[in-house]
Image 1 (cartoon, helix red, strand yellow):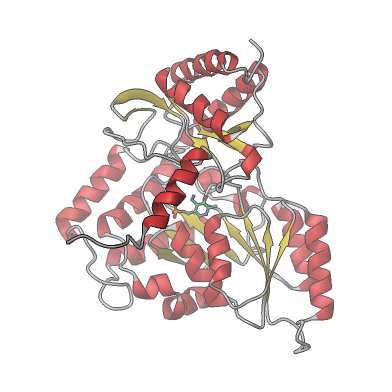
Image 2 (cartoon, rainbow, N blue to C red):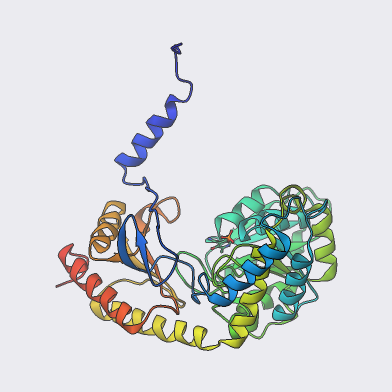
Length: 406
Ligand code: PMP
């Protein structure tokens, strides 16, 4: 039977448009484990594209913990947490994370993304105001979209502008004249995922304290990277007890999968009752929870990993700058190499790939249209020799394409 009309034909047109604008991203397929060297689309490459900061995705202790949990509990949890999907491993992981983060209580989610989209609409509503950094992660933006709370955006990392918004909001109250806001919530990434810069958390906390606002920090890229043994940005800045809500991910430096929210017991309790991804989506496989628990222990037992991560990061960044690349305002292992034009970024990434280096391009809408870049992340698993080989490829391709002077 032939159809008179394809109602989804507009999708083909949209795809063609993306391709014409060099904004179409094909998926790269890996046929080996994540690691400093992996196999992508059949080619062995040095990987500068994963979030596996500490090299834990393939750590034998995490693998063994997962295998043991599979033997004991099977492969799936079988239900959402609030019905029959809370296993001892989930609760133990949350207890371990609460100790690691020095907070009263932790609740885990299936991912960092669902943590943000679950927490923000649960704790904010019409009577509240959310004040958000302009470059916050997509999952924070989606969390705000799901909330009934009005929101204001402050320019990226601009504490003075934030302070002005907060004082204005606190003195004027709700726009409908219904009195003061119930909650003013300041939300920021701890480390910004596309630029690698760090939120000015001490200034944010001070400004929030002046008006009694709460602070919410998404530490997806600070978990395992900043603070003692990777305890995150609150620990890095010595702000324990002054940040109300910390979100973390177990999908990046911890090497597994999942998100978590660290804060008070009351926060955990209300999320268990109301956070929609928690209530309506199946919990982690027990093996993932077991591997995450082991990741916390490894982070404490093997501090050389974070030391190595930072030593390699400094060297890699210094060399890229010496070669003449623009690494923006990065202060962490996330090292963008800003090219500007999408087509140039895609060509740069493609040529590096041919030279055996996997450094993915990031284009609109992940970054602004004229801010296309390669986004690299150094990991603790990369040796000096890997980094030297990668840098040689960057120098060769960068000058070949006119991105740096030969
Ligand atoms: N928040 C930020 C700041 C992130 O960079 C990411 C990952 N891209 C997330 C949340 C989502 O974390 P996950 O991958 O665990 O869903």
